[in-house]
Amino acid sequence: MFHGDSGGSVASYWDRGNLYGIVAAHDTWGYYHTPIDQITAHMGVTPILN
Image (cartoon, rainbow, N blue to C red; front, side, top):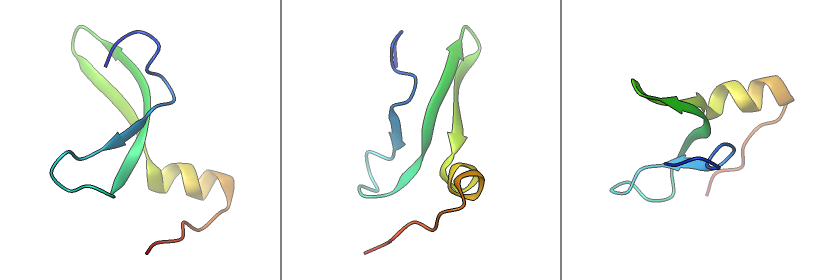
């Protein structure tokens, strides 16, 4: 993750197809994301899963 990655998806390389969240920020201590369940709850939507 680099500058400009904010808003990008956070997914597992090994567990493809699972969206964990959206990149929020990063600093010298690590990377931070907003979990997908918080995003969908805030928007009032239910994700459709296959």
